[in-house]
Length: 201
Image (cartoon, rainbow, N blue to C red; front, side, top):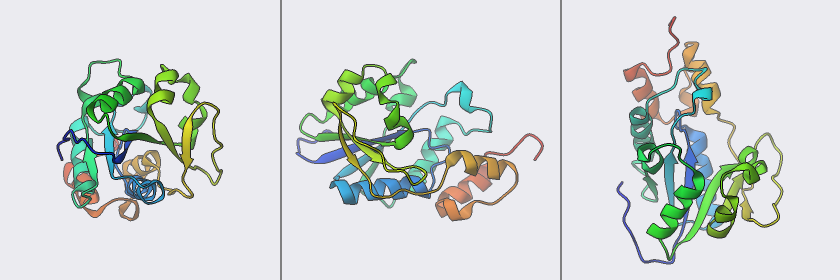
């Protein structure tokens, strides 16, 4: 799923996250965003994992990208970018937005994010660039409906999905099987490679 520069007027969205692991909630959110916001494409942008997120076993960038590929291989509207994985640290969202705005200058560029990040968007680096380049597609969490923010273009999704990558990792580390929240190919990959196992398991 290589990215190609296209001179179209399509609407495309960036969907960032650790995807550790990618789960059916991610797919549901992307599909809802496509349907509700008339997206032509969704570009999944896995990021590096912050050190403070390593209290539970995590997967490498290579494993996460391969699981994403397995999740999305039957989704012609989805692509994967390694931009944030391969870029030298520190890596900022405004740089990602600027990169894709230059790559697809004729596209209407959106960014999919959760209500928790939407609430703290002003604390992100260079929010003025994000405001200029992006329309934010916000998905709810915990049943609350996100509110619009002054100065930002936004569209609020009507629903979300209860799956949590953190809870999936915890369950897998404890020896539980989370196949109901995972794409079958991702579930098989996790088992094959022994991912998310605690040291004692």
